Structures are given as C-alpha cells and as structure tokens.
Image (cartoon, rainbow, N blue to C red; front, top):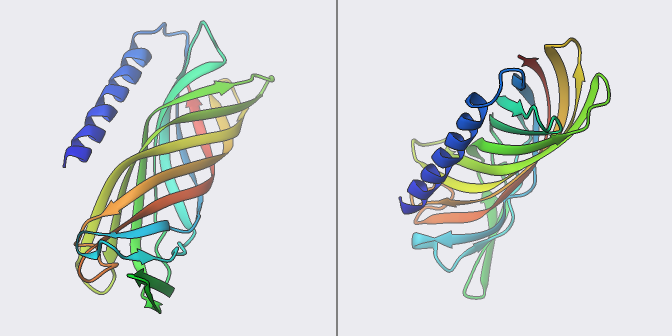
Length: 228
C-alpha cells in the first residue's frame, strides 16, 4: 500500500507539471493528440523468486506471448525550443504467460513440471515523457524517455483468483513522424519498457504464496496524430 501511494503521488505531481506546461504556454506552440496501436514483443519474465509463503523458492524464466497494444498520447512542443517537447501516453497489452515447462528450486532441490498458462494484463501509463525531435520538412525523427507506471494483473484462467502489482519502471521511444498536412501526421515507433512486478500471495502462479520478477518488452507501434 505504501508503494502504491508513493507511485500515485509521484504520478500526480508529474501530471500536474505537464498540465501546467500545456496550458500556461502560448497558443501558437504545438499541441498534439494521437492514437496508437501495434504489437508488444516481451522478453522472458525473469529473475523470479517467491514471496510471502513462497519465500526461498526460485523459478526459471517464463516465456510470455506477443500481444496487440492500443493507446493514446497527448503532447506539446515548446515554441521557444521547437526541438523539445513533453508528452503523456498510455497503452495496454496482454503478454499472457504461456503453458510451458518450468523449474522450481529451493534448498538445493529442483523440481521440473508443466506450468499452465496464466492471463497477464499490463497497462503502462507514462505521466511525462521528455521528447526531442529533428525537423526535416515533412519528416520528423524523434526520441523520448520517461517514467512508466505499470499496472499489472495476473489471473488463473481456471479460477477467479487474481493478483495485481503497481510499480514504476522505464518507458522509452524512438520514432519517425510524417506530416501529411499541417494538422495531420502518421508515425511509427519502437518502444522499450522495463519494470519489476511483485504479485502478492493470492497470485495463481503459486498455490501457497506469491512471486516477483522482472518484466521487459519491445513494442512496435504506428499511429495517427492531430496537431493543433
């Protein structure tokens, strides 16, 4: 609960700064909104260790499924420094844990068996990305980095048991924007996300306790933006 309050508090401050920036600046500066969709290609769920009733256990890395992502952006480029901007974005993915062979170890003893698939949903909200761009006529390559707030939920498909984890991580992007008109743009970008998840003892991945580990994913996204 303390971690969640800290995450929410930090996010509120970040969003407050962004909104003050957006609405206290000259109207001739560039404000934009955009929708985006694409595919998330996650790495393996790694460095897995037990928590709560599973403390002392380690689990082999788990494979995650590729998934569709969708979301939106709201951003602003400064009038005095047209190469510099700030942006908030949110997008959702479902990198479910595949059914696979996994090894659980504790006290020098290892047991290998079949892990049934688990439903995993990850919502990433980046309160503030700092974005830089290079204007080349209608083309604009850009790059950005910011804090990501990751809301993850894991659920056993065979029961109603589920567990959630909210953690701060890293959100990055590298893309190319094409200005179709003065107000409409198309873009494509690569993102990299990284965070740690800590699922409580109600996690369906273990019968008597929870599990925590490191999550990361490569994301390929395309979208359409409108520039005011």
